[in-house]
Image: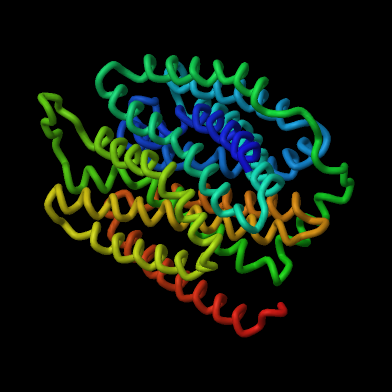
Length: 402
């Protein structure tokens, strides 16, 4: 168990550091898109989505890569790509150049994400899978702590170039860490029929509930909510406020909120995972988180005081921690039950979740004038999904042999 945690924690920490630049961009770009040489907010939405759209065709290729090369090689390549993309955000301007660099980051994240999820599946059992998945998600989520908090704050105080150089160098320093922590070795046999089998599994009836839930949950939490967080903060706090003598704006406040989420995740995610390992309540707890998020989306659409708005946003982020941890754990549960299709199931899951996160910002960018219709519609979708999760739990309980 201790050795398993060591490997899972190692790849999660490296992923977190590589994520710094991307997390910073999610806070800064929706507000300062003109400073990046963009002509409209819609272009910002495309830039925050294109890396995930690219990952759709990349996922099978990375799956092929990990069947032929070890995780250490894949992670080191990902670190180099993360360094290049992070550094570019401070020096390149214009939609086309930034589009290319977002594609570079997409390749880096795909290598890191599939490598991390497969590590959890391979090293876990039914008794600790939720805990290890919670540990993995919470540690790589710390990248948002540095990227969102420091990125948003430092960009307003000292400028974008300083932030991107710093984050880029920190990412590059992960190469020695990866070399020493991540073991060599190819863990699965080479399979020539992977692309065909993967397509079949994506559309197989028994896999649809998992893939649909993964798509919607990641579209909403990592796409819509993440992309619009700084805008909804700006809606409630349109002017800079003074905190300890410093004037901070919406970018800094949204960065602080995301950072708080990343700060509690190392404690909350493993606890949630461990609780559901022993109590068998993954699906009911997931449904509760989805429906609770729906209510916070409706409430945050109504003008309120600064204190109440921040409180609602924190509850929303807490529900996000629970929902995403349990969704990934349910995917790992299903993957672990497969005898021959473990890699393909997890790759299929990453494809649909990447698609969801890609569509989220694009959808949100269409609501430039008001976020209320978007949030209310998303709330209805979450309530429907929560009810569906509860119904599927009841069906499984009444048909235990399935």
